[in-house]
Amino acid sequence: MEEFTGGEVYQKKFDPQAYLEFFKLESDSLGNEAVTFYLECFCKTFTPDFLKGDTLIDLGSGPCIFQFMSACESFENIIASDYVDGNLQEIEKWWKNKPGAFDWSSIGMYVCQLEGNRTKWPEKEAKLRRTIQQVLKCDVNQQNPMAPLRLPLVDCVLSTECLESACKDLASYKAALSNIGSLLKPGGHLVLSGLLESTFLVVGSQKFSILFLTEKFQREALAESGFTIIQYKTQRRIDKEMLDLCDFAAFYFIIAQKGKGD
Ligand SMILES: C[S@@+](CC[C@H](N)C(=O)[O-])C[C@H]1O[C@@H](n2cnc3c(N)ncnc32)[C@H](O)[C@@H]1O
Image (tube, rainbow, N blue to C red; front, side, top):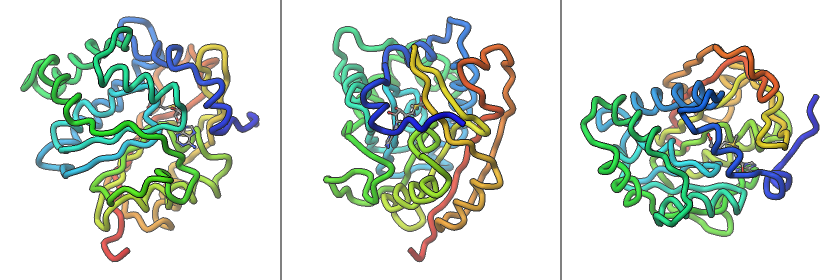
């Protein structure tokens, strides 16, 4: 079993630039497989006919904004968040259009294509910059992940590959589900995606532990935390060469609804 690398290890050792290498679509990167799966799921989910609303919070955003490219078409406000200051600074760099920000245009153009070319990337890019309202520190292991802030309850909580990075064991995963669920309005939606049956992820020269998750456990944990699963989708791993970077067996994508009576 990998030694657990929690928030403090992320804070000291997570290199945003090395992580962003996964998102250079032109390179032969393992990120291609992940990002295309997530983007296709987001494109089908965040539409004015399906998941829409006022505010969406993303937890554990990393240095990334790909997860908001479809969401900005159906949510008015987006809050990005992460535990690692370097990740928040990287998002801010892009948000404020500062020199040296990561170039998301190939992923952006891919999303525009997925959405049927209703908008062109420069237009979507400007809309996304307007829709992001705040970039905040968070910790999914705290009862209130946004503490010391207390935010108004939101319509949607999104999180990609974060809980399996942040949680030490299955008990803390269940606690983190309740923590992040507490940010949602009753009847609000949780959109979770990430890695199944994985134990590690290498970013640059640093290996991070990943909590080994199965579909059975996630279904039980969501039900115990008061969520109803609306969609549970998986896609088996295609790449078998880059097992030294990450040993996941499949990706998952979940849409769940928080109980209305909570
Ligand atoms: C594998 S990255 C995923 C980043 C991004 N969501 C994506 O899909 O590419 C895991 C992220 O979880 C964040 N993280 C680790 N521990 C955390 C915690 N306790 N609370 C919030 N985020 C945490 C890390 O800083 C990192 O950005």
